[in-house]
Length: 112
Length: 114
Image (cartoon, rainbow over all chains, first blue to last red):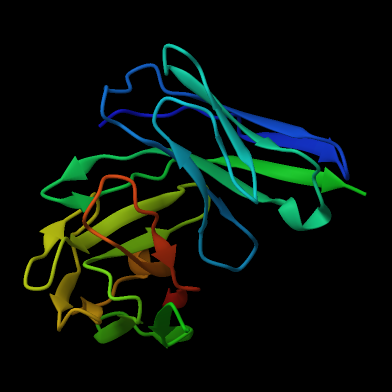
């Protein structure tokens, strides 16, 4: 399985942009890059995903490097509610199902 | 729309006891998953079910069994609980067709084995 590497923790200030990096140097050509986040005492929540092009949705933007060996999740204007653990995951398709392997993630702290 | 519902929310077992964790989804998803989460370990896949009638082992299946009862329900059974199975258990579901459908998670079952 292709693996991802993320910083253990990051800190930012409220109302400022946040850039969360992820390295995935062994990504295969058909792997999608997914991001999830987990708020305290809750299950993980889907944030965004992409293959090659940059992606935007109401929660965040995903910037994917041209060689696809890294990506960055961008929160444009962080709020206190964005404090969570963020997971960068590569989709591994086996037998028609998605088997997503979650690593340690990045714990994001937002300062008021 | 409830999404993914897990029961119970909390459970305390003694070593050797058995129990079944229940999971149901109302999104007509084909695939369902069981994860466990331990401090500092991220989420680890226990079992998954690509579609009704099929189940497969994940990363940490030992000590667990699963049943895909129907399209909606996917249960996880601990036959003889051990303290090492103290964890938070998450059930998830996704649409199987297509490589990029997101997982939807329940809010977890917090299990303590003494």
